[in-house]
Length: 197
Image 1: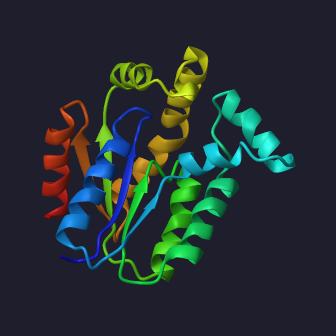
Image 2 (image 1 turned 90 degrees about the horizontal axis):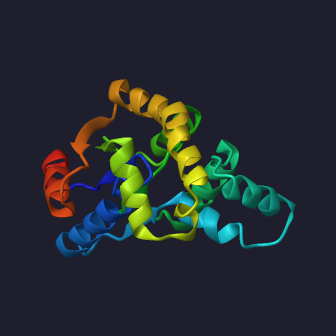
């Protein structure tokens, strides 16, 4: 199997984390010789905003208000992970990033630098109502405030949709739209077909 570079993108609550986990398990079973680099910037943000310091105090405020963290912080997080973790010969899975057109274009430069061939973008398409129901059901602390959730879902339309449009047309990427409003196993079956694995 060729090395996989997979970008899962979609609304909060669309199942990106679930599908990323299922793909990691699948790749681990079928290509145990290849390590997997999994990058989910939201989890890193949640860890960092527990730290003290001016930057993380400001980031915490953004998070509490349901805002989108600035592109430079997101790029700083994943670029540090690239530099520290990439050794060559690993699969790379991105969960829920990039979150803007600017970040997508920055990621282009990294993927070109690391000579990642034919990255795949999996857009897990779900309605806003579906996403809201999923977010309420998972019980995470930052999913409990309806105003915060509404802001997070609003920045999807404003910021993430342009990145999705970019990937639909960008040369060098394989773009796949998958119906996320299915069971996790049905979604994953579509993901595997898209990736030809």
